[in-house]
Length: 179
Image (cartoon, rainbow, N blue to C red; front, side, top):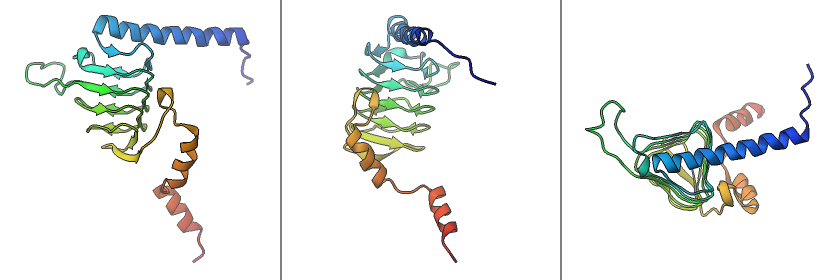
């Protein structure tokens, strides 16, 4: 079955509508929940941000939070508020929070950081670094990012050249070697 054609005007309208919807969502979180969000933060509509203690969440300018990410600011279940502690969770400017990442309560993520998809951030992340894993560990330091956590082009090839092979890549090269 052939895909249906969408006219360029309709496509541009959809893009504009989506941008307006995201801006409205950020405004809603700031106005009604009191979250400290910069006006130019991009938060996916599928990202889950803790609304139990919304004043403890702060996200810096030009940061992108991808879909299915979870940002927490408390360590208690929603049914029992009296026994738990609340913690401030801060994400710096020009950061990228990958999809399905979990930012635990009290974590401070510095400026210009990248959190890899599926990471569980349990400790503070220094500025200018890339973290990945469960629990998240610093895999690269000294990076520079453009707005919304995009790596500067010169560093992309450098990171790819210095990245160790994954276990799957190592296994495939071993099986390809003659015995």
